[in-house]
Every structure is written in structure tokens, then in C-alpha cells.
Image (spheres, one colour):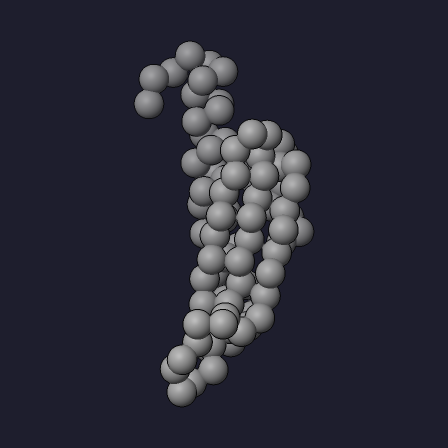
Length: 84
């Protein structure tokens, strides 16, 4: 998840868990990736599954990138006084 700080530099902590989810009752093997990102007092949780571990990680990273960009835009709008 390195590189997320270029989307928002106020990230204070990131926890990442990867593996096979416990609730996986399907015949095919699924992998999961869970990220908990702390930004000041706010926490973003993202969890995705895929048939390939690296795809699950990429899904989480892509969705976090979108969320962090939204947060950054909100913060910029607040600092410039724009109403969104």
C-alpha cells in the first residue's frame, strides 16, 4: 500500500490483513485483503475478495485511492471556502 500518501499526506497509520477469509464456504478458493487507514481522527475501512491474492490487494488499493482522493478534495474545498 506504499504510495497512498501521494493521494493524501495526512495518513497517520495503516493496518493491512491478507489471507483466506474464515467465512469462505465456497468450493473455489478466495483471498481477502482488509485495510484500515487512519487519517487524523477519521478511520477508513476497506475489504475486498478475489480469486487471486494480488487482485484482492489491488482492489483494496484502487478503492482506497478513490476514497483518499475524495477526502483530499473535501479538505481542499474547505480550505479555499468552496461549497461542494
